Amino acid sequence: MTKAMIRLRKAQLSDIPLLVSLEAEYARDQRNIVLQENPRLRPYLARRAGTAPHIARWLRKCIRSRNTIVFIAEDQGRTVGFSVASIVTNPPIRKLRQVGNIDVLFVKRAYRGRKVSSMMMKASLEWFRKRKIRHVGLEVMAANRPASSIYRKWGLYDFFVVMRMEI
Image 1: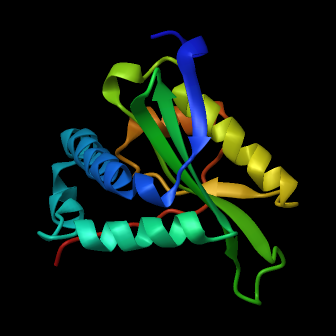
Image 2 (image 1 turned 90 degrees about the vertical axis):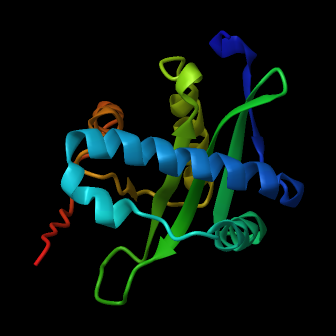
Image 3 (image 1 turned 180 degrees about the vertical axis):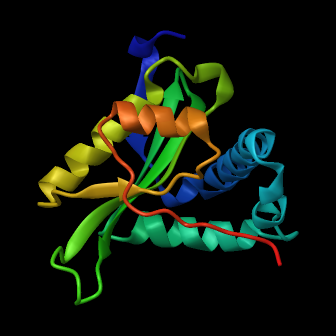
């Protein structure tokens, strides 16, 4: 399980069932990490039953879009993670017309610490550069400290904070 064995490939429509399964694992994993840090977020992380068809439609749209790239990370044919990166058009009040967004970046627990996320991020940034996108961002839950730590290491910084409360 060394870095040299990991390869990235662009997702195909035939990968949608695999990606739906990975997205569910991503959501469960993120929920567990975040709830350990802040249990008050439970209502915001609850998912409705039957979300798989919605996720499949979203992924199909992503794979077909010229403004989105979906990467799958594999180790000798075994899927170990995936990422989704997209170009977003800002409202006309913003000076920056388009920005890049990392929508999802997920690596299975057994492969963390092996630079798989760095490989996917690097590939996404190269994809953005080829499209003349110079500003890239992402959203991360404040309670997801492991992810925030990695993103800061890569040079990302806080830009916008969303705060919540129950009334």
